[in-house]
Length: 99
Image (cartoon, rainbow, N blue to C red; front, side, top):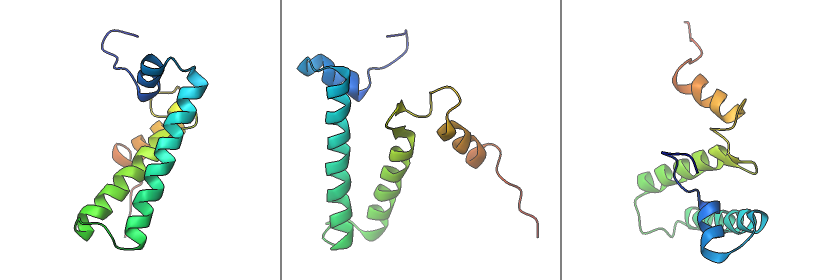
């Protein structure tokens, strides 16, 4: 690990369980899928104990995380990543809107 780098969820699971990288990726992906299903069920059935606005913010944060962490790992730090380009387009170089 490089200086200043922090362990990722896959690396942490590998260290804790002795799993291979492929097994750890599968495990983390299954956790993400299970959590995503639970969140969608709560929104669909309006069974969350949180306010609607908080729930919407949490769902949007989860959607962002899914875009940033894809099947190839951390999509933002990969070279030539579409995720990085999308974030830069959204936040740094937005499309000008003229009226």
